[in-house]
Length: 634
Picture (cartoon, rainbow, N blue to C red):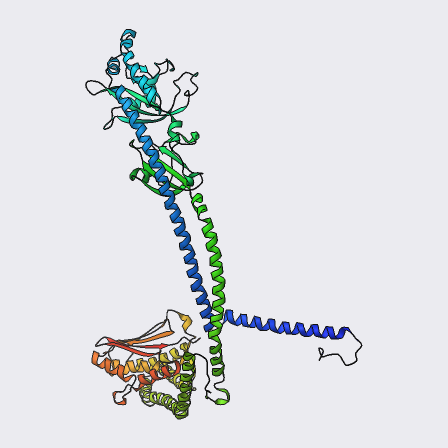
């Protein structure tokens, strides 16, 4: 051959190298071909070891993935709970400090609101004269001095009367005298009658009533709380308003380790931000998904988008009704805490997956090797018309048991074939011959009598039709008995038979066919399967009774194949007769005349197995239905 070694004494030095390289490539090509053939069989052939390997790998992989997901979820949940606890602790401390300072502010405002001099000035319809004011403002100045000294949270206190009286902690020296306080919405709100606690919040407003020289307060936002001053009849005659220093309030909200990129802030009953580390956010309306839950529950947490990314929102109430303290922590801050755990877990999962694949391959090939040996043994069965199996050890007890049982089965099959093969074939042929012989004599005699009657009566067209139908029937029955025919051909044979029988019954039989899916007509069924059933319906359902009747033939598609139903409106059977007939379908009794149904049932089972055959339903004086189940053979 072309790759043989060069002749001895050849003086061509490259011939040997060329030959060796060619052989090496040939071996590599064979190995690659075998590998590809093995992979093709493994991937596309449904084998036990492939199924075992896939399910084993899939099950273990699923368990590993579930373990990883649960571990990551639990770690994230634990970190989230830690963030919630830490944030609640910070907010509790801030709330306690805020509550303490607000309580002190409330006491200071209560002293002013209940002061006799404040009430005396505001009870006048108009601002009193200077002499009257000096008499009472000296007393007010002593109180405001104490407030200015001991209340660090209060930046200023405005004393506003409905009569137009205005005062503050420094005796109006820093106020713009011409400022219309009474026209401001926050001042008007402080004069509105209120139910319940008369210490309330006015929210955020800008301090544009100070002189421009007061740069620490002029034009800056402030958070105000107020207490109303009431007259003798409990009517509102004015209010004292404390402006809180927002920077000092904001300094109470210290962030924890998880809130480097988060924030703690305060909102009022109108969802307006009143305290925030970012001054630009103060006065903004907080509109996020789930904001209504904050006011429906005392405390809690939820997740929602905020500032373009998902945040964990934690909220708590404060001492002031409607004020809620909120902590917003970005979720990526929480997930970043679990990143090292996820990385270590991923490495472990990858390692487990590799080990799982190696172990699965080892176990699968260890188990499949003896199975392959058993399959090779079974492949040899039937060669040279032999069913002999040689004893062999397959390493595993279960596979040895299968091999032994299969050997016993082959021995029994061989014996049964030798004893019954020819007998069963002969029996089947005799049954088919008996079936054909059964329909010929009596039917032919009756048809000839009917033809004679039609000829005597001069019905030429009917006589011609009878002759054609009879000839088609006998030509059809003379074909090879074992062949399969199309359903449309078998139905045409039944129509010819029913035409002749209907003439016998003076056209009183109504024949109806119901085939919703015409695609079943080319399907193939055993020959002479339907006509004996129709004949049985006429003979046992109507007999010699010439009254009107109906026969319906329907063909429908079912899960296992085709279902042919032949129903009549004859006299039917009671329950005992029906049970007796069903027993005779398996064990015929020629005396009862049910050999035809037995033959059909037996033919179907011989051709297609025990899953197919005949079922009969009947009701006394209502009719009988015979159902034939056959496979769909295109």
